[in-house]
Image (cartoon, rainbow, N blue to C red):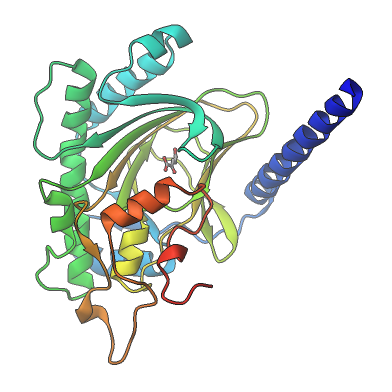
Length: 328
Ligand SMILES: O=C(O)CCC(=O)C(=O)O
């Protein structure tokens, strides 16, 4: 009996190891052997062409790199150092001294059993309260505030490129006092072999703004191929999220992404601002973007309905599928 049980356990754990190995092997072989990846679009925010480049990048990749932003390096490096100091504490100290209102988690992502080789701090962010007694949160807010402004600037450039009026039609969702945005700091510790750091998923919000240290690992999916994103600590990376895909009626693609860690891993630390709308905001295609007789494949929903649905699904689930008018 014990023998059968052990055999079953080891067969199922071998199966999951094999499947993880195949996922990581596919990804890393592509990284190692394919030099022909399309280049990640780069947008220089100081150039006049920024709005058209942003639209092109969102249509083709759902993802781009931002250079020439005006976020101070001091703010970034101070928060990063503080975050590293936290994650390098002994486990018991991390669990005891979580910098509230962040929640701290290790290995488990979301409520549906997804796991990854990472630890993270996650919090909701409010647009109004900037003064805190908590040192870590004060620093995080000093970082988040200009990041939110940059996210709004990008959404306004996007609106210009799409000829939308008023130009704050997208950015007002993030600048609203009730915007339901999040901030997450991910820490991927050194690991012995190839590991899945963060499984494939799209972000549900409007846009996400990611910055990481110089460790690689992030990959995005384009036309069925996983493309490694070269890390650049002086840049930010922007994701089109699910709500923006709906608001542009599929013209912009919500980008699938994941993190794969490899051997001799240098610790990766990423900080992501997820710009979300107010809970009551209705998410539907913007009418001026719709051509004559064009229909939306999506039922209209509120951000509150969407985020509740997302919380009940696994990472790799197509989160928009329950909101399709005709299910696949
Ligand atoms: O850590 C990264 O580089 C990506 C993380 C991510 O995709 C997420 O937190 O949703």
